[in-house]
Image 1 (cartoon, rainbow, N blue to C red):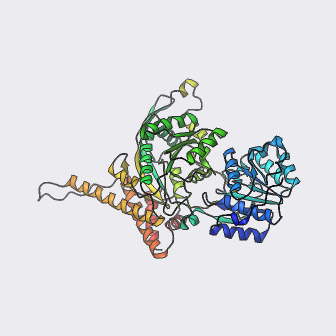
Image 2: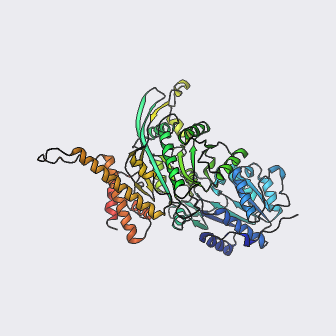
Length: 577
């Protein structure tokens, strides 16, 4: 018996961007439509509304959804069932056709890549709408891309969805349009775009505070040499990689101190308007994930949920955590894209994966807003590349073909290579060892700006930032961070004055000691943030856009990474705007 047609009256009210994109879709009636919307904006609801419209008016008879992971298949099927669209999440390639009591099926890109002809036959049998969720995954491999193209060319309609429409390679994304720009390069073109900055302004997503932790790290190389470095200081890439890995070592002090700070932040959120707030630690591998879970149990006295692989058991554990009051979840990459756990509000980015695509997907797990004023806090190592990605949260990117590629970030292979000489023997490789690492709060990044001065873990200065109220608007976050930074700097000046005060009244006043380079950078960042805030109040432009304009004029990285000279140039420039 065929399933009943969905009723449009059962749909929840659409957000403004969803209504606008729906009108545009219905106006165009083109075969292909690409919608880019930030994680948490409601891409699933938008796509299901289009599916219902096309089923109701007879344009299509069936719906196929293609998702990146097995867990998302179940998530899509459940969301569709709530609005009267029945999708088979258990469809296998061996089944050849969906059962008659379903409107269609949900499959993965891997499924399609393994048997594209099965899905081509299904698509040709009935007039089909294909929803390609996180379409950039179709470029992950030649097999997947070719399979998607072969399977769904006969579709009546194709709807491409993504929250991160860019890749680090030149693999073209099937069914996405590319246009040649003035520089001769091809760029992906979307039919509807709803970015993070738009969603933040409308209260659809949460403001994200990045708490970057530096600290002293010591390790022994495979050649037996002991090295020490401060995380976040300018270094060669191999030293950054080794210091980063040392900090993430669960046997050191850096991770326990950061996890303790993150749990303290979670407690503040739970006590101030988000009673069910949850935390997520993103780990690099399974062994380390289990170690982090043990550390969390020591810190909190409560077991953490652990998700290690994309299998049926993992999906059930994610669903259980999402519906519970449990404090912490530890995952290895799996909870990085599309997985819907709205109560996640605190994250610890404890992985070496750092391409812009992966970073955006991971941070997307924390931005979904449920009520006005909710904020998210993500703890991360003070590594220059990560600081840059955190500062550019609001940047809109396209997929560019043919652009010369610099390696972006430090993937796991690069970090492994950084830990051994090319000619090292297996015995020497075993001698690499993280010796020690301590953590301190280096800076807080929000809206493209950097706040705060170095604060040791467990000190009142750190607690000032961990104790920020849980319910704040984006403007309130900026004001509070500016106030906290000013208070912190004033307290430092008072302490310095007390230490240098001479007991003899007649003694000449000593000249203040010169500031270190680190102190100078902090003072310049504070001055730049104050000038940008003044510009914001004068023009109404968001802080992030003003910072981006200064970077466009002056060049250089975000202020979290900028040199003293670059900060001075931006200060001079903003004063002339």
